[in-house]
Image (cartoon, rainbow, N blue to C red):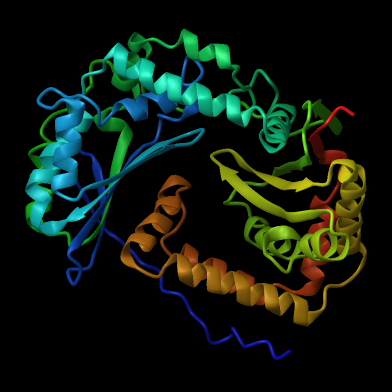
Length: 425
């Protein structure tokens, strides 16, 4: 097979226009006035789950925004959002909460007014919270009947520790402990003018900035109640290897989740490790997929990935396998790790991985909203504006010898936590 050359492919480092609102909320703008759409992401960087006092509060708070507000009921707000064609997605992680709006430029005045209502003038009601909790409880109970959920949960607890906010987990009874006062407190402490920034993309003009200044930038909202305590959680990366097994009655498959701590995204090994990961289990033709799916037939899919967080990253291997093949699958995973530690990867295989990763990078920067989302990672981890080209250069030039060196350094079984969830028969 002829592998297309990637040597002449380059990637542009997009630098946003940086400004601040009157109250010093940072704005990062990627303008493209050929579009009719505006993309706006508002990031609350201290509103993730590690900052909550009770389980579920972070996730529930974001759901209660865009319900009732000072001037709108939930139904009238939904009608207004529909009328002006506003798309709103809400997401939260361990560390952050994201509210992302997309709308037509011609309605920007009306939409900014709605965003002001949602963020600055919410009205939290116990009856609405009860409905959301009821829905979430059912989803949670359904997840608890999935081996993949149980294996991942126990893996994170085994890696970070059950007393650590990154590793602890809830029970369904914890939903009953959340009150509307908890939601109001978390909102007032963590959804504040000095704990957020805004990313804009698309058809952004001076009028939109003026509208934002007159709403989100007009005053220091929630300043008196703000809790700006940063992420001071200590992570113990010196772990004892262990295997955790949980049983689920009548499970039709076994789920495996195994991995270890990897270095932070700023470490010199991080980008080379993403190449090792891709080759090992990060795409469809990876070593794990070729062996465990294609040759052995133990699974429909098995993947590995690296998840960065503020103080490091986690390397994880996850897959659902035939009920009686969990041990055999783990043996094959270890076999593939050892092969990478003892044998040199061929140039052809490594070039295929490089092509895949470079293509993935180009797709992540294909469009102004995609560029904005990609740049958010650079904000989060304080990466240089030339990070894309820097990463691509490392990917292009990594050698088979470097892959072997990294495998020997990081594929140490004595650093791995293994979590298995399966039928108890």
